[in-house]
Each structure stands twice: as C-alpha cells, then as structure tokens.
Image 1 (cartoon, rainbow, N blue to C red):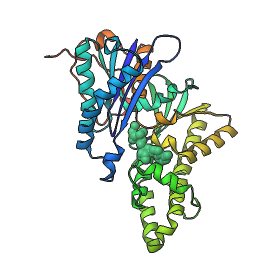
Image 2: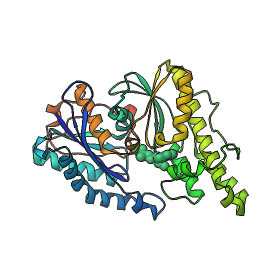
Image 3: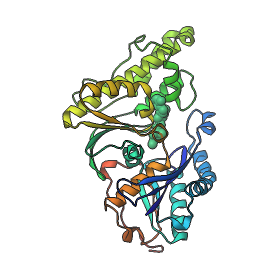
Image 4: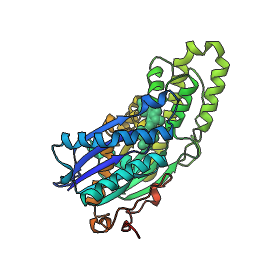
Length: 356
Ligand code: KG4
Ligand code: ZN
C-alpha cells in the first residue's frame, strides 16, 4: 500500500511517499521538503499567516516532486495522510484541506496523523531502526517530553516541560544574543568556540525527583547575564552560548537517564529538532554506552519537521491494524487539532460522509 504523507504544522512543508508492503516497517520511496525559515527570519519568529500562505504555494509542487522521485503517479496512492495537530491552526488547515481534496479526487481515504507520533516514529526511517519497547525523548520547538513507547499507538507520558520547551529555551536565549531565528542551530554553532562552564546558569527541576522539565527561568537567567555583561557581551557571546547549551543539555541528559532507570528499559529514541544538537548527542551517547543502553536517532534531515515521519506514522498505524481503511473511506470532512496531547491520541475516528 502506498501512503502519501503531508506535513504543514509549522514552518516546513513536507511531503513523502512510503510503501507499507513487504516485511518490516514502511519503506520510504521519496520525500521533499521546503523550509520557510528564510521567510520568517526577518520577523524573528514564525508569522502564522505567512506560514499558511506559503504552505499553499508549496504543497502541490512538492507532491509532484515526490511522485516523480518515486516514479509513481497519484493514481497509485492508496491513502493520503496529513498532520492533524498539534501546530498552527491555519498551517494545519492547508495540509488537511489539500490532503482531503486530493483523497476525494482520487477516491482514496484520508487519514489524520499526530505530529508528535510522527517525531516519535521518525527513527524507523533510519537504516538502523529501533525495536520496541523504548523510552523516547521528544525535544522540539514546542514540546519536551519523555515517553514510554511499548508499540505503535501505546504512548505513556513519563514527564514533560511545565513551561517552555527545550527548543524554545534555545531559540529565546539565541534571540537575546542577537542570533537569527531559529536560534537552536545558530547557538550551537556559536557555542563551539565558547566555554560551557564560563557562566553559572540554573538547571531547573534537576533534583525535582520527577521527570518534568522547566526552561522558562533559564532565558531570564541568560537575559540577566547578558545585561550584566553590557558592552562585554559581544566578546563573551560564545561563552554565554556554550553555558546556555550546557545547562539545557545537562537537564535533558540527567532526566533521560532517570527515565531509563525508572523504566528499566535499555533502548532510547531521541526525536525532534533539538535531537540534532551535537552536544546532546555526544553526552547521551557517552552516558548510555556506560549503562549498556542503545540510543537511536532519526537521520539528521528527519529530526526537524518533515513529511516522511507523517507518512511513516500513518503507514505504521495501518500495518499495526490501528486504523481501518473501511472506516477512513467514509468521507472527507476534516478538522485540525492545534492543541492535542499524544497521550489522548486514539486511532483516528471514522470521518463522517460529506453533508452529514
Ligand atoms: O521538531 P522541530 O523541527 O519543530 C517543532 O515541531 O517544534 O524543532 C525545531 C526546534 C527549534 O527550536 C530549533 O531551534 C531546534 O529544534 N533545533 C536545535 C538544533 N537544530 C534544531 N536546537 C539545538 N541544536 C540544534 N542543532
Ligand atoms: Zn515538530
């Protein structure tokens, strides 16, 4: 079965095609991505209305590119999957609307996918996929969560941020240092030339005894430090960046290790944009090697938002029998869920026929 996946929850338009036939997890046939980062950079963050309009411009040309890349035609597609939430409402509506219109035109079912399930399952796109069960550290611009994953569709929340996400902590701190949006990768690059121990920054909730995170206080501490430095900031920017990164990474690593001990699992999956961070990877790798824990990461290109993870999540749900095609075929009305807890996520309900 060929599953087309469309991602449009934030500032990346992603489209991909997977094949669920054959042994093992779905196979990625082709994918294409357009990042709006350059467009939003002028505003220092994502402008939702501009994001929606740009998704409209990109989604069909990307779909054509994917079909050509896979040497298939749209008539070969069996299911059209799209990100139903969480994300920006207008941006989600573009992907959902296009996916349902395409599906209706092709006479094939459409299927809504949870964006975070896409991130969680993205390591299955790699040449060295994980095995269930595992602990997942989900670190993106909007979410910081530790989950226990026993199988597709079984996600237990172990802990999460009570305020800002790790990606937000990177982005907001980077903004204070005058770095372009999104700040995470820029801050990480700047940190390469700095000393992570130069400034003492807080490690919030490090000793809270649970698996929750809090990053909102960190940006305030970075701001206070930047103000204190005054004219010296420019010369000490790399040290401040390295110290900020060290604080975020230390909390992520320690909480993740606590989750591994608590669950007694020996496999860890790291997903989401912050999973691309080199310091986080090297520290997690070293700590996990010592403890006999296998760590899996998605390929770097699948760490940040993309269509492949949406097609993969849809394909794996279908393979696991969590979604029935008959029910999906019922119609093409749709909704999006800008706020949506993964732990609430149940197999997508049957879509009501048009006009009901
Ligand atoms: O998963 P993602 O693409 O989008 C969301 O669903 O939020 O994650 C984007 C986040 C941004 O906050 C970005 O700054 C961060 O991931 N990020 C990084 C790195 N690459 C992306 N943060 C730290 N180091 C990186 N190398
Ligand atoms: Zn994401």
